[in-house]
Image 1 (cartoon, one colour):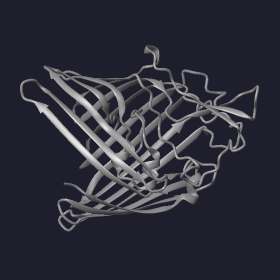
Image 2 (cartoon, one colour):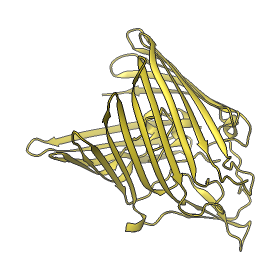
Image 3 (cartoon, one colour):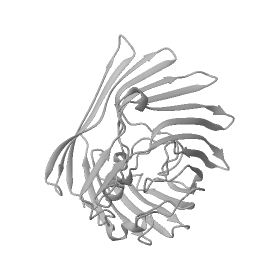
Image 4 (cartoon, one colour):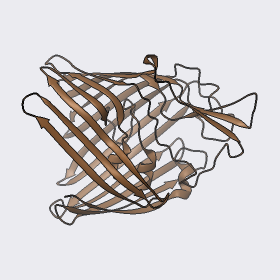
Length: 361
């Protein structure tokens, strides 16, 4: 599934005369599966601070929300191929090209992100995974991305502050679904199908704070499918998403985290073709166990996704050992299970074991 070598260059510079800095993080990647060499520019941005305002321009990684690998108000692009094949977790997030403005004050903090160039999620396909293709017999496949006009610019706003013992945030997003849908051409069905990304707005809130010696996390999001998605296969109608999580240290260097996530799709329709369609109700429970030993040089962890509604699961055991300050080794696995028609169950033939070696200098 994956066999790659990466050489990373991470450069940071700053100015002492003005409050400004710049960073470039880029990887030269050799993929033994595809036999190609690519340049992956992960981040490339300039920061500037002026009083209570700071600005970031360029390619940047943005992370919002309080979920542990469960995303509601984090509407920024993800690389699910990396997540399901054992790349380091940092590669789950994809950089966006845009501008971020942040205002900080004692009463209220504000963060605004504008993204003029749309970036979709990187979704597993039959090219690298064992997956069925619902449109295998389609001769013509078109892809319709959002435009690059002013009206198609994505905008995300976060308002946040400390309230008592909790960090509280409110979110608004106006943009597009990052997971594609499919729209058959009625005039040429089934010879032609179009991949597209319908319009989406998200309104949400989150709170995170200390409770009973641990950390309680709560998050809410309403996904408003602004375009009519009923004729787009694979895109749900408007839905509500809820998350509750709790994590604490059970013993020195032994941590436990649990979450419960729910999607409510009141207008879900039966899919017109045999691919994963949205159900009216879907829930997922997650468990994270993490133990550090030998002066925290050896880490043993397990992260599990379990869906009672879909009756599918993903288990991600992992162990890593820091041989020295520069060299580390990681061994892990992705184990899928469930029915072929569910989100995780369709990956059942893609169980994998991976090893990675990293040297920093």
